[in-house]
Length: 125
Image (cartoon, rainbow, N blue to C red; front, side, top):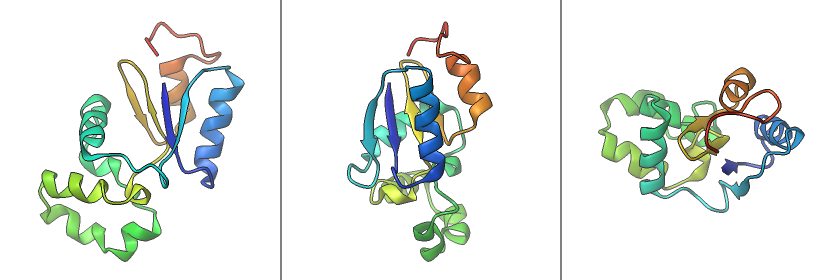
């Protein structure tokens, strides 16, 4: 699995603790130092099944500074993906990428449902 996060983010820290407590193996990636490429974002979006807006870190300072809450509705998908690829701090985190799934944001119940309470799941990770 690939675990993409911002290490200073408390939600990301909780997600990492969740993974570590279950002895789940993952590759760690700092989203600020290694920004996701547009192709990755597109693939993650498709696998997640979420609306594109859910890929944006809507509570982030950069999102607010750019006034994206009012700009996003008039932007095309291509423009939104290109914008997300410019700055990892615009991207919702953490992101957990498994063989057949992508989890965006940390909701413990959702992660438990996908990975199992103890890390043992029938899902391919």
